[in-house]
Image (cartoon, rainbow, N blue to C red):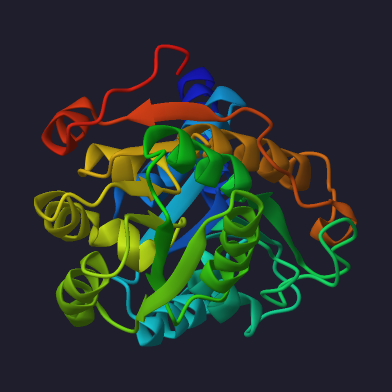
Length: 315
């Protein structure tokens, strides 16, 4: 009789353990991620987000399940991915870059959405205002110091008279930054001309045409230009035209310099907001858009050498 009781108890304990394991598995928090395209800034943004969650105790495969999807630069893919993440009942969606954020925000008003690598969520119509979102969307802005970047251009290329502002016509946030850059050019006594591309196939021709008209090129934190920066910088440098850009990854791919934000740290900052949503029950509607305070100077010394530019000692 004693043996039978012990056997029954063991079986009960086994079933209890299996039930607990199953319950634990079922309680995994689903985090959907939609990234517009692969390039160093957005990749760093995503890595910072994952690392930031892990530091807070949210580890993929343990207590959260991250479903990472990349749209490969295609707007149609953004919509398809957004639908998938919503249908899978994600507990939170992390959208990297404006078109990705717009795609998912247009399809759900109930799932919490945190965005990053979005310059101005308000003008992108993701929130009612950056200070008081009032929607299911909040997150972090990658607004860079455009004015400081134009000042940097003036310092590195003091002979420059005319600047070409090169960006993708399909990105609302690029227009926002271009306007800031134009205002900075006016304050620095620089003429400027806009040059836009609508797809990657136009980058080579537009850049070549621009090189014959300007003394320097400025590219904001534009996803298409970031993905094509190796080509842009090669053409510009071969034509002895310096390129000042919006972020460090573009400098690593051949641009001359930037004074910009750290996208990895931006991702970690967004992760802190995610923890507040998941653990503390905060609503994106009540969470102001956040910004990074610190910016870093990056100079591509190899490009500077090819251009014959000596970086001032105070930089």
